[in-house]
Image (cartoon, rainbow, N blue to C red; front, side, top):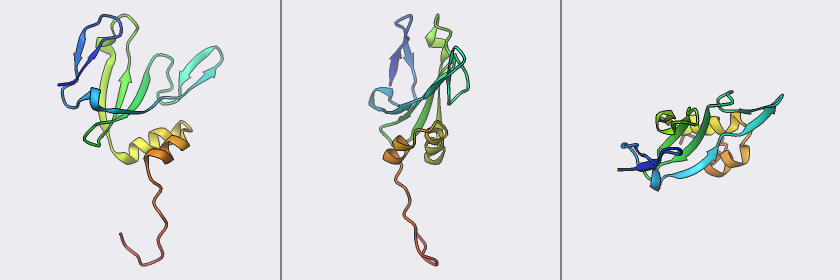
Length: 115
């Protein structure tokens, strides 16, 4: 069982279907200033933030933090994504070097060659 401490209440959060402690952080969402607001490029929101992790079993998971600062236990959610979606998540934010590091670029093959 994997648990995570709530940021504000020190309550253990039971994730259950993967071990967060054994997962590897690939990247947190990138942000940009829009006027005087710091906006997540992944969510388009000032409040909602995301992180991409790889589980010990090799699955890609996006953690979404939609907390309002008072109760982080209620604001965290996790969803599985395909490797292609994980790579796209990185590239949409301009995190190309991180995407290249974690997702090998398929080598071009000649015509008629199948994998």
